[in-house]
Length: 394
Image (cartoon, rainbow, N blue to C red; front, side):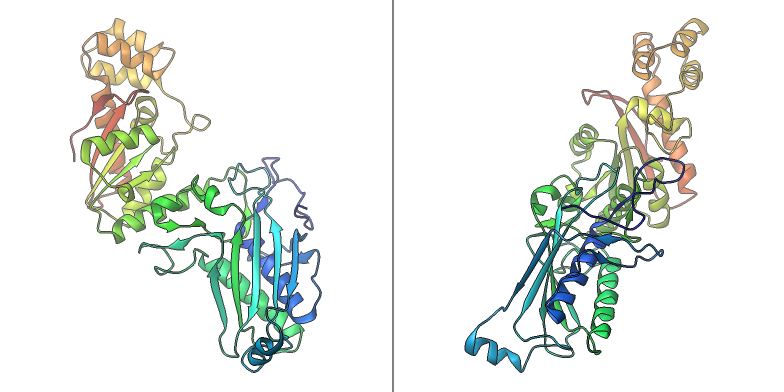
């Protein structure tokens, strides 16, 4: 079964793309259904939740399990200690929802998010546990303490609020329960995320600030960049590197011996790295990436994706002139098919176009940093990982 939701099939304005739901929204729906079943014996299906911006999606349940959690003397012994309003002592309820990320290429699309609810003694409140496939925080710098399950603050608040509403509808009082959140195959899926680098081990994070996945908004990637800076700072790293991909990461490790938690998977989001480090400075930032991408940064673009910025060969021709190119070579650079072709023309003529791009990109980065106490250097590489340009630190 997959999710169903009131109004969810409406297309996103201006894009024609279908939105989806975060793991936090799915966990909230599953928790609400499981707690309702714990109190009433029946699972609401579909289960409707309210999100921070007012949406009220409904989710179909893929899993419904209600168990006694103990028999005979064991259940009797627990009866006096457990149970909120109307909760039969010793019982557990599990509900599961399949995540639908809409038209976003989300690695967690189709993942089964399960929540098991178990009653706790009165006054316990809501206690969160990481089940199989949900990670545990092992490094400082994240919005959760070390040792906590990787269930972010907004999903926690959503689950607490919805459980309180369920408790009020079925007898009053507070929700005193243990919530164990699991994601089927989550540990395997997490290998494709930032979690291992951020020190979140054992599985995925339960995420979401609005509950809605906006297709191609890239908000999750940018949030991961910010968390990467936070973790690096908390670990005492004074030198970090924003890299456009795995090849550039290998280059900066070879150049500077940086540890994994000092490497920021910048991708195309140079602006996200620079703006966050402007507010949360480190002593030194190295930006490393392909020559063509970093020529876009040199030209003033902060989003380096091919759909949102292009290599400006006229700009490269101007840099080539600064490096000693004659007008004939500059004209060839301006007409080159690719940025790499322009670089090869200049290299053959002894014009240091790679170094000029690196130095200009560094100066653009310093402009974005607006005087933040950060020293910046830039390294340009080719597709094989060879350094084809570098700036001095400034």
